[in-house]
Length: 249
Image (tube, rainbow, N blue to C red):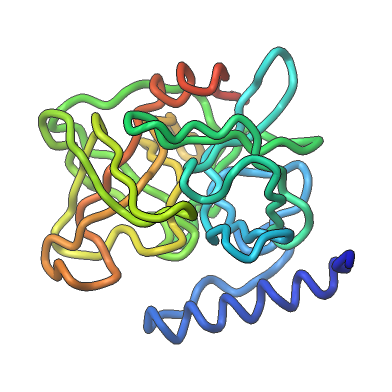
């Protein structure tokens, strides 16, 4: 049975209310063009929910990319397998080219139009234009923008590569070779933030893409649903793993 846009939006609203109750926080109010109501041309950092699957996860879109001259977006591969449609609440894209192999956790979202912007609310500006890309180095300070937790900055990149085990739509899974960054004084990632962009700010409204969030660890509350340490793929790993290039504007 086909689901109308109105029905899908009602589902998204209901899920957001449940997330608010579970997390003890209220996500940003839905309004035209924000990360919970993202229409074409689509931006990164939007909250996306599956519209044709009962087992796929609610996640966050990463950033817009180009592939052979066609626009797309990216998210974490553990969110859903190929063929799952995501809405925010209007159709955001279909999962294609999923890579989930122990060293890569990533996938493309394909639709008609995307733009080189990421949602960075709360704070000002609420949307930043992607101006470039670079892999972060140990000691760098980066920002993350998960749809549920919102934009958080001043996470310090940790040395070395790391492994993380978590639950996917196929069950337990581990990814190795991830980069980590942490900020211990505030939560920086929750469930639903997977796939969100890692970036640094440039100018008054620009962003440099550094990577894409995969998962978290609660350094202050290991058994909780919030994380102070974020694990992510660097931007070069995402580009090489999916055969894409970051879209800039």
